[in-house]
Image (cartoon, rainbow, N blue to C red; front, side, top):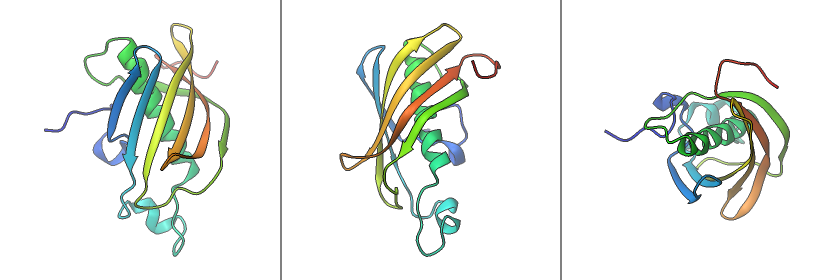
Amino acid sequence: MKQRLTPHGPGFSFIDSIEIVESGHLLRASKWLDPKSPFFGDHFPGNPMMPGVLLVECAAQAAGALWGSIQKQSKPKAFMLAKVQDFRFKQPVLPGQTLTIEVTLEKDFGALAQFNIELSVAGKPVAGGSVILSSSQATSP
């Protein structure tokens, strides 16, 4: 059985692999975008691209993987997305591409943590911004 990298089920896990580049600070993740994924059929028919909200989800899942590694979690923990800040989309992400997600821990406040995220395809930036995750059921800061 393949090790789970996120607490999500297989249909909503947007991370295929992770690499801790700098312990406690920097993580690199990747996701191959299967052209058969249901969202490509409907967003937009004839001109499919990955929805921006799913790019943010990729970012949040990678941030959660980094935070879990910092906290020495033995299995993926369900952190909650508390806030999306200044996220920008630079170019479409297409079926069949491999997305690289680089996550840097900016601030850890205990129950909340802020991460800077850059998403790229073949070394070219496609999106980026920052997210705040919560380790509890709390709402945004």
